[in-house]
Image (tube, chains in turn blue, purple, brown, red):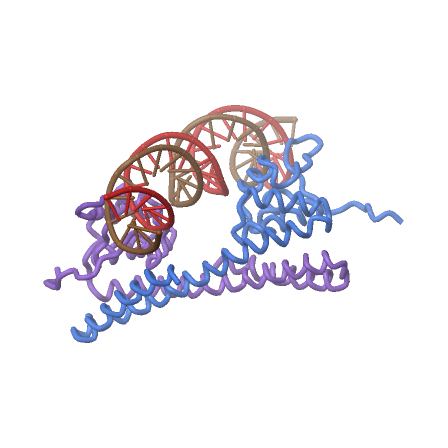
Length: 153
Length: 153
DNA sequence: CTAGGAACTTCAAGTACTTGAAGTCAAAGG
DNA sequence: CCTTTGACTTCAAGTACTTGAAGTTCCTAG
């Protein structure tokens, strides 16, 4: 029995809705070769996405969501098509991504502390508590000092 | 204006870390007039941010984070909406920023889990453990769904 | 069948940064 | 004192989309 039964197809708008990427980005990714050329309608020139296309686009959407660059996405997709033999390079790419994310997490935590301190500061100012406002302003300055020192061991 | 002397100053790197905008973006915003020219060091030509500058940059960072366009931010500045303002307004703006940062922290954590899982997957593939690879691929797929949902609200 | 509108197409230009090159300045080590 | 290291500077070019214009094509309704 053939597994190649008539599959469902999708318009670019449907593909966009299902993957979360705008249609313009789908066309752009195809134009620069991040995703393979999508087949077109017999009479029209409209893109027609099959299930396989959609899987590929979904995969690329996930990579883009991790903040991966276009260049790395191209490599990653190329390696994926080459099979498990490229596991080493996949691990390298992802380890780099892991390090970027760890840094990003640290930076977000720092900003959270700063913003929390600033909110306290303005609350104290609003309440006319000059002493507390001054104390919190000083803490914010010290946070910046820690930041300066953090870069060097 | 405060009669307090501006005791503490910040480098562009510190201002970037505290507001979450890259140093390159700070320079860019200044060059196109979204933020006022920042004073420079006496001998060096390096930018020196005081507390007031930092509050202003923080405000712009909040506006940018809400998705406001450059053009609208410029208008906002031109209308005198930006600058020394009431405490309550600052608190409102910063509370919004706090909520966005909490979301951002969640998203980064989710991405970290996704990438870690993918690394495990490729390690399993590299080691020839197909059963584990398939298990991890399935887990990653489920996590990718969460990741896709997280990017939207 | 045919008119109208929504949705698709390409391509060029615009947006909002980002990166790289080349140079300046300033504290730290020899 | 000198040199190296590194953070900062400007400016031009690059990146990753996004939008707009102008022209098909699909679909639905009269």
